[in-house]
Image 1: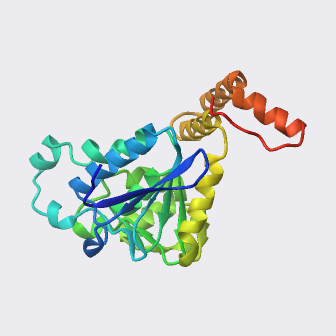
Image 2: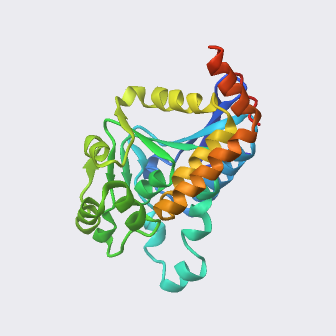
Length: 262
């Protein structure tokens, strides 16, 4: 499929490849408008349906992962416009339905909607020039794509409240200390590090990767006892897979496993 505001490609020569989506509105610092989000949803769903793809990376430019939603497009919206058209809900939530792991490789600005989009991914690897924030308060609004909900879960109430109420940005090192990003790497190594993590995920059995992602996500949507029971049942279920037999036999016999993803 041909896209205008994103670039897609795959990397990896083994049975499982990595799908890479690059946001591509450089003059607008990858500001997120409806067309871009429609294209992003389409690309993510295509990679999710492709049996040759085992993991997905979402990235932007060195200067900006995404500098928020497109304010120029939003400025004249009325309540009726955003409510009747189901703004954000209509085409930003696709990423939540993707079963394969999605890694955000973030450099430059990831603010407003850009920060929210990164938080929708399964984890964030940040370049040392990355900047994160939710500055919507400066525009007379609040975060609308999950910022008030996901940021406190990532960094705690106090820091999330400060960032959202003041509009302050935090650098990559502060974001790592706070728990928003999994690790910080030099800018020139960002894609290599993200690709390395993605290829490692691709090398594992897909049923266990799916189950692990589902179990971790469930921890944010349920109480501890329910979450542990959900994990336990997925753990039990994986003993019905060929990959479990192969993985454990390979360990016992000190050889590399050859997972078949079933």
